[in-house]
Image (tube, rainbow, N blue to C red; front, side):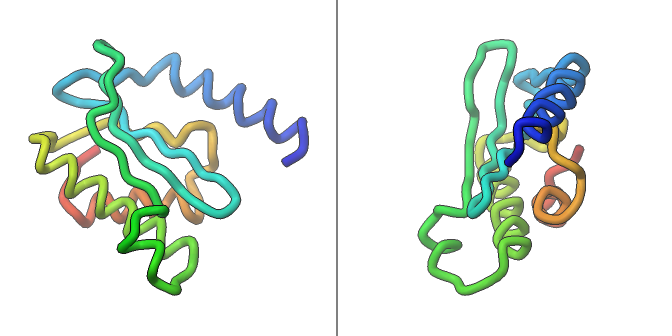
Length: 118
């Protein structure tokens, strides 16, 4: 990733984080996208705790031979399932400076279809 793209993403990330904040009732669903994998976690910014997390490195997702977009959808469904077990029904979505396209959009769609609202 070029330096320009990194600086641009960090600038967008700061602008998003100035508006979004997670609470215990409505935590922040944040996404990190690397070249190979995708990670999602629910964060309570008031206490500074991570409530639950999921990634494409989970054994049941890693073992499947599917595309990265499909893996992101499965990660979204997994984080929504874990959020339901903790008792979370809604959250706010933090795309972390990434464009809402491709894997980030697929993860968000997976979360929505699994029943978590944002």
